[in-house]
Length: 339
Ligand code: ADP
Image (cartoon, rainbow, N blue to C red; front, side):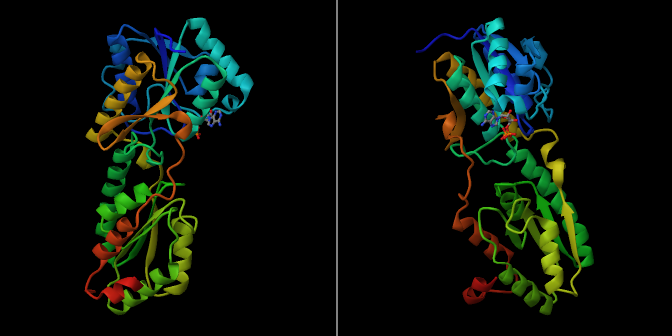
């Protein structure tokens, strides 16, 4: 049954992503605009269980829209997997009269919210914050654009030195289950090969094409690998290639946590602001236990339990673009099939 909310809590949970602060700001200011009391909860579900909760007003979110990380901090919280932990969390909300919760996080955080709202009388709204863009039902997640731009900037720099030395470079980007960072940053930096978890990589074909390029003295090659690819990341790929290309100079660079930090891009700030605003509106309108997504530039409200990982969704067309744009001196379609 629909009930009016008057006090809402906001938390950031799971892996952090640039733009989470912009979402917190939007939630606080939209809530205040509607006359709601807004409470910040520190360290995700951990702070909820430990009662680390404080009142936020519009001024408390001044000057954070441009900052990476999250002022509310984030955590992974074991106790929240257990009913007892969730019960303590509920009691802390209840004693303050908090009657709505906004969770900024990934699919794991949303699964926690589903369990929580099923067991207790707390409507939950999710905002998709993850650099991996691995949540089904939304074209954007907060932090993806910033992470990709960081990766592109780093890869461009590596390309300079790689080119100067005629090297093969294997660059590992984040993405344990989703290859979007690898795909987007790889295409944007002109990678010859992109290895992602969603698609089976034909390593024999890559080796064949590298050997062929070696013969043509095309020694510079950029390979972008998602950390969750079939082979277990860039170091493993290097081992395989070294074996088959003993004369090639092959280097590895793992970009790592640099991709999580930094000032959010304009796109991430906009997405976060829109999602934060609509999350509060959704609570006000009695649309509960959904997460806010954007599809074809329109807001969508998707049931939280449908927030499954977006695996296996990368189309054939993307991979074809990678192949065609990486070709130099090959105009023959038959040869394209071998690359
Ligand atoms: P993300 O939200 O980035 O996917 P995690 O998967 O680590 O990150 O989830 C963040 C937190 O959400 C977990 O540490 C846990 O507290 C909570 N959580 C995740 N899955 C569940 C679940 N099935 N039941 C209860 N809580 C969960």
